[in-house]
Structures are given as structure tokens and as C-alpha cells.
Amino acid sequence: MRVLVVSNMAPDAAHPERGGFVRDQVAALRRIDDLDVALDEVPPGAYRDAARDLHRRHRGVRYDVVHAHFGLTAIPALVVRARHRGVTLHGRDLRHRTTRPVTLAALPTQRLIGLASPDLASMLPRVFRGRARDLPVGLDLARFGPTPRAEARAALGLDPDEAFLLFPYGPDRRVKRVDRARELAAAAGLPLRTLGGVAPDRMRAWLNAATAVVVPSEHEGFGLASVEALACDVPVLATPTGAHPQTVGTVDGCLCAPWDLAAWHEALAPHLREDDPRVTGRRVAEQHGTDVYAARLADAWRGLAGG
Image 1 (cartoon, rainbow, N blue to C red):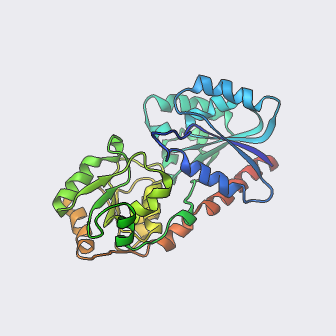
Image 2: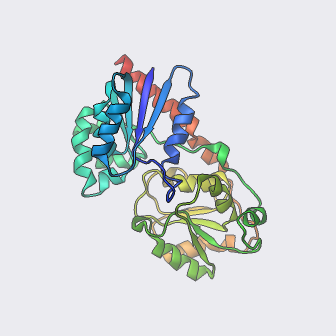
Image 3: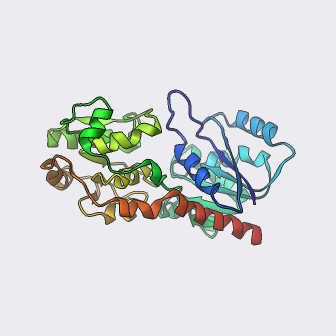
């Protein structure tokens, strides 16, 4: 089966991390014997240019499946010839007032609608729910795992004894609610470190260096940063959005609950008393690996071909 995956998350110098989870999924798909998977990444936003470039690069080729990531990407991907089409929706494409109408306009052209987490199904009009499948991207488990905190901090040039909370996003992403993370850090008497534009190969060190990872988001698509932390056995406190109830919410020592400063501080307190606090999160993260979800996506593609 010949497949083209189209992503609107091409990385650049300012955001080397962008789209990494799509590239990880494609790498896992390429490990499946009966698939021939190509990836085409276009810059976010320039969709007219993306359509022109996709047409130029894939002119004369007909794929068995063209699968887009993010609702807006499905529109320029239509210029590529395909027997079947699919799209994975990640949340913002359904929630944002400007992207939702375009996403919904694209869905009649897509035989397969993948959802980054089950809670996105309720945001789809009923007419499309029969095509929707729970198809997260998953985590590249080979890149994440426990490292002693002092060692991780030293690798980052930090004081090995420096305790801190980690907000694993750029502070400018308002829906992630860095204001809440700052409140919790102040109550705990710890500094808060935020991430943005961090190269993927540095994430493991940052996660292991943290006392705990704090994800007080209003919304998540899947919540991959939390699963990355769990794969490192690092405590996570997160709101019940995206897949957090199925991931963070199943690990003792973690918290998956609506934002409440007192309750979150109470849940964090036991970890503040430890030099290297850990949870048994990796066993849960392993259930959400790229290979697990790539196999699920491959089955969905085969269903299109046989349907």
C-alpha cells in the first residue's frame, strides 16, 4: 500500500520540535512490511503555497491513501491524487473559531477521520462520527526513559541539586495556562521552567531534571508531553483533557483533576520531600507507543482499501 502523509508542521530554526510526533509516527509506519509511506511537510499557514508545492512534488503519482495531519492540511492535500483520503484531527482544528469551519468543510472529502483523543468525537457533527476513529500518534519510547535527576540536570548545565517544576510548553501558548503553573510553583516555593523551541533530543533531559511536570491546560489534543514524562517515570499533574484520564489518571503519585491550587499543591507535596521523586509511569506510556498506534492506523487504511 502506497501512502502519502501530509503535515503542516514543518520544523524551522525557531521551532525544531514542531511536527516531531508526526515524523515519529511515520518512522513507525515504515516499520510495517506492507506499507510504503512517504512524508511531505509544509510550513504552517501558507496553504495556497502548500497546495502548489504538493501538486508540483506529487504530479503524476496516485497514492492508495493520502492522509493529512490537522484539519486545515486536508484542503491542500486534495491536489494529490488518491484512491482514499484520511485526516487526523488534533483538537485546535475543531475548537478554534477560524479553523473549525474550514476543517468541517474538508471532512466530506475524507473517508477516514482520525482523532488524537476520544473526547474530540463530541465536537464532530453527527454526520461525520461514523467515519471517526480513535487514532492518536503515540510516543517514540526509544527516546524517553528514566535518567537520575542529578545527571539530567548536569547535562543541561544546571545545579544538580536544583529542584524545579517543568511546564513543557512555551509560555506564549495561552491555552496551556502557564499562569496556573506559576501559581503552583509559587505555592511550592520552587522555580518554574518553561520550554519552547527545545530540540527533541533535549526533552528527555529536561523531563528527568524536573521535580514534577505540570500540565494545567484548558485543552489538549492527546497530551503527548505528559506521556513523555510518564515514560521517564516523572510525576505529572494534569487537567482531565485529551487522553490525560487514560494516561496520567492511571498512575499512582500523579494527579489528573480540574485545576484547583490547593488540591494540586497537596498532590505535589509528597514529591517535594524526595530528592529524586519517581512514579511507575513507563508501564502506562508503553501502552501508547508509536508502534501501537501505527499498527492501528495501518489497519484503518487497510479497511479503506478493502471497503
